Amino acid sequence: MAIKKKILLVDDDPDIRDSYSIILQSGGYSVRTANNGREALKALETHKPDLMILDIMMATETEGFDLAFELKNKPAFENMPIIIMTSFLNKVREEGPDSFQHILGEDWPAKWLFEKPVSPEKMLEKIKSILAEVNASPMSGS
Image 1 (cartoon, rainbow, N blue to C red):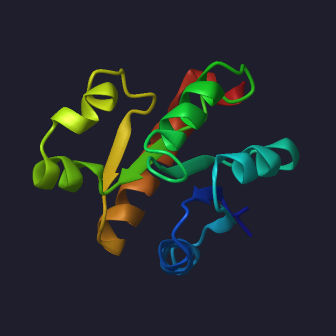
Image 2 (cartoon, rainbow, N blue to C red):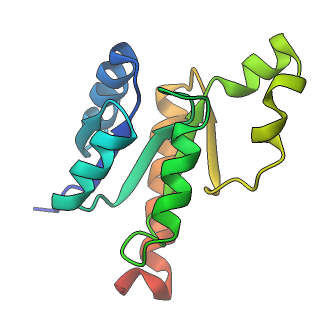
């Protein structure tokens, strides 16, 4: 029996956490959730996931960014794939870029971005692709 890949889903919206957890579990993944960056760090102390899905805007407009940058600077997590999930792009379209310039001007600490809402099929397909890419990488053994 294959070992289930572990995903940490971090989002302050309980409906998002619940619905995406069901989608991920139906795709064969083991899912842990966290409500915010602090809870995510606590979860990471005991279990390193194979992949993290991280909302950008939680308690602050950049909480997800802050956590992703922090993890990329820790050797134990620097190669862990992080998918940033956000309705941020929609907010920028609606409100204009001026109030988000501090975010838009920063380097993104993750290679992958899902704009909410994301279709279950697209999410599962992309996660499968990312994990296959990571497993094929020479760095995956570290």
